[in-house]
Image 1 (cartoon, rainbow, N blue to C red):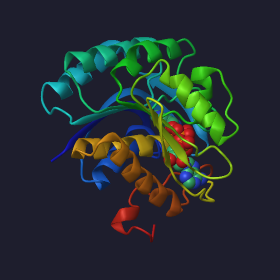
Image 2: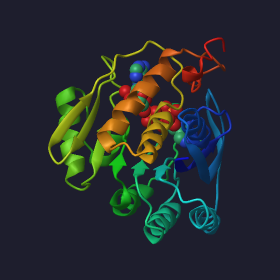
Image 3: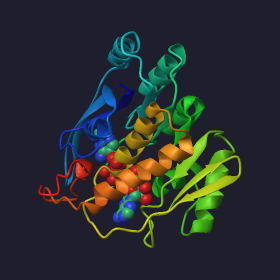
Image 4: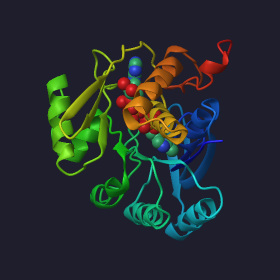
Length: 264
Ligand SMILES: Nc1ncnc2c1ncn2[C@@H]1O[C@H](COP(=O)(O)OP(=O)(O)O)[C@@H](O)[C@H]1O
Ligand SMILES: Cc1ncc(COP(=O)(O)OP(=O)(O)O)c(N)n1
């Protein structure tokens, strides 16, 4: 059994965060584990409240996991403050964790701030150092570089800019662009476009979490980064295309689309 760990926040509505990650890992046949960084009271209309764990408790969660069932890959999602980021980086180094995917979650699409303002620098200096791949969306890549993205050429320029301070793979996700859903995988001047058609569906809560945990799942199975990204893109495209419609706002994806749950 391949094993993957998500270090992320809990989404009470089940569409994003650790719930999306564990569903994704499970349907892809990977044993999922979680270290929770924060509880969110959240639904399809937005985030109502956030309750962070202490750095000491996060440390204990990570020790419990790494001293027992060692994960083949790790996905990091919402980490709301710099102290928690430091704990994660310290523990991943201490245990020599492999296949690390960092989704630099900053703001939910509903507009709630999921990371403290001052934490961005620690994200660069601590978490990016241990990551094999980072997966910013367009607003996150803009926040990381201070440059705006309006076109595919801008995506390439911004990926290059991020490449000046991060030497792993950068997956710059194009889902927030209006024309299509092409994502750019970039490393050391090498560009791979991961093609995607824009799907008309207002229910896209948790797309970033689902994509990054699918990448972590495929890495755990032994695929390399480009293969994992291609396979994960196929998974997210199916989950959006299944057009689940739950809740009063921007609803979740159908993580179970591969299991024939089209009657949901
Ligand atoms: N409407 C859509 N149609 C097709 N693919 C989409 C759509 N929205 C997002 N995606 C894809 O979902 C994945 C997650 O991207 P994105 O939504 O940008 O992440 P985040 O949730 O971090 O904002 C990417 O592969 C992106 O291209
Ligand atoms: C607990 C928690 N973690 C992450 C997010 C953000 O989810 P993401 O898939 O990046 O994107 P949106 O759902 O905001 O489009 C979250 N909302 N909650």
